[in-house]
Length: 461
Ligand code: DMJ
Figure 1 (cartoon, rainbow, N blue to C red):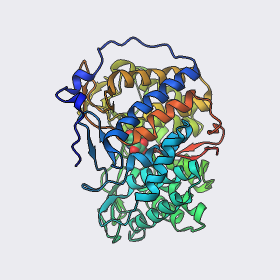
Figure 2: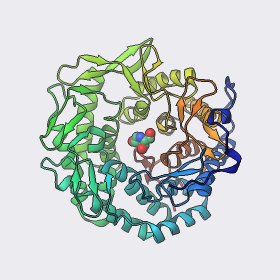
Figure 3: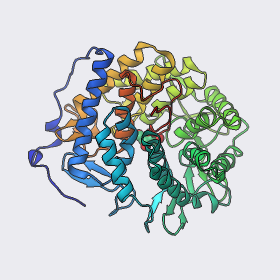
C-alpha cells in the first residue's frame, strides 16, 4: 500500500477540515454558472486522485494513501475507468486521453485473483463500455469483452443460472452461492450491450436466465424475497426489502432491459413486480411516502428502515410511469436531506432517526434521482434540491486533497473518513453536471445510464 502522506495535511484531523455548521441554503445559480462550479469541484476531487493515487483503484485523500478495491495488493486503476465518460462530457479531453492511454498500456484482467462479479461488472465492464462510447478506442471494448468472458463462469457454472458471487479472473473458479437480488440482476445492461456489440448472444442470455431463476420463485403476491441461494434455487429468508439494498438495482435493470435493450420480457417483469411493490410495500409516515420491508409471502409489513441507497427509486418508478409515487418518494428523501445536510446511510422512516450506520459513503443516489427526474419533468424543484445536495457535499465532504466519506452526519462538524469511492467520479459529479450544463456531447432525449452512472446511451461524438 502506497503511503505518500500529504505534507499539508500531516497532523490535521479530518474533523478540522470540515466547515462550520449551519451553512445557509444557497440560491441555485444560473445553469452555466452551476455547471462550472460542479466541474471545478469534480476537478478538485480528480486532481487529488491523480496526485496521490494515479493508477491505483482509489484514493484516501486525507492520509494521502491509496486503496485496492477488488483484490488486496492489486489495483486495476478503477477510478480511471470510472471517470472516463465524465471526463468526456465535461470536455476534459487531455485527461481523457491520458486515462485512455493508461488503460491501453496497463489494464489487464489476466490476474490470479478473485473478484466480486457484480462490482466488477457495473464498474469495470460498464466503465470500459462508456469509455469506448466516449473515445471510439476499440481496445476499451476489447478489454470489456475479455472481462465479460472472465465473469461468465459465475453464470455458466451455476445449476440454476443465477450467478455465483465471486470468480477467479484467471482460472474461472467460482465461489459463494449465497446471493442477493441486486447482485443477481444488475448485469443485463452491460452484458446485453456486449452481446449487441460483439454479436455473441451468450452474455445477454446469461443475464436473462439469471432473472428467470429468481422471478420464477415469486410469491403468489408477485413479491420477491431478497436473499437467494443460487444452488438450491430458493430464497433463504422471507424479507422483501425492495427498493432498499440489496434488492435495488435488480428492478432498475429490468426497466433498463426494456428501455435500453427493447426486451419486452423485461418490461413485463418490471410491471408485474413493481405493481406488487406498490400494492404491498408503500407506507406513509408523517405524510411522507416510504417503502416498508415486507414478508414476501404475506405482504405483512415487518420493517421500517430506509436505506439511502433506495433514493434512486424515485426516478425509476417515475420513468416506469408512476410519476406521483416518484415525486412523493423524492420529497420524502428531501426531508431527510434538509434535516441532516447529508442523508445518512440508514434511518427509521417513522422518526427519521439514524439507524446503526451514521455515516454516508459519498453516496450519489439522491442526486441520481434529481438528474433523471429533471430530464423527465423539467421541474425546477429537482435543480434546486440537487443544488442543496451539491452545496452540502462541498461544505461537508471537501478536504484539502479531494472529497471524502462521512463517518457521522449527526456531529458538527461532521466526522469525516478518509476515502473517495471511485463511483464519485462516475456518478455524483456527472449527474450534477449534466443537470446544469449545455453540451453537444450529451443527448438528453436518448440517454441511458447504468446503476453506476455509465452513459451507455446518449453520448454524442
Ligand atoms: C454504486 O456502486 C452503484 O450506484 C450501485 O448500484 C449502488 N452503490 C454504489 C453507490 O452508492
